Amino acid sequence: MKHNMQEQHLFEYAVIRIMPRVERQEFVNAGIILFCKSRQFLHVVYEVNEQKIKTLCPKCDVEELAAHLQAFALIAAGDKKAGPIAQLDPPSRFRWLTAQRSTILQTSGVHPGLCDDPMQTVEKLFDQLVR
Image (cartoon, rainbow, N blue to C red; front, side):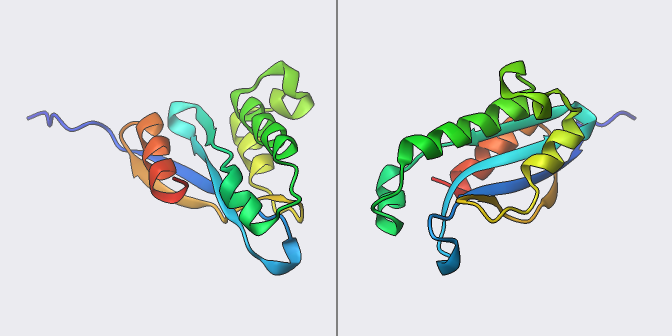
């Protein structure tokens, strides 16, 4: 007897954080990076909430932050405009995007989960953790 359930896929995700003053450890969640190997899915969703960012750092260059976030999205998409990192395979791009950094743009630890639809899952995580 065949079940009508959709197949569950293992995924990994990290939260993209804007940390204007690294020494203070204060941050604004700005996006989600989600990778699902079995579906060959790597996607970044983000938003630049200027009000939240300016609350932590009034002098922050929001346009520069937006450009860095856009670069993350282009790398995830494998867009040639994003340079050599974007030409790596999806698992390598995910590891690069989620590597530890001490810059204004950082990511949380990587968390696993199971999903039916990676795009739906990245949107759901974005709504829960960023908006």
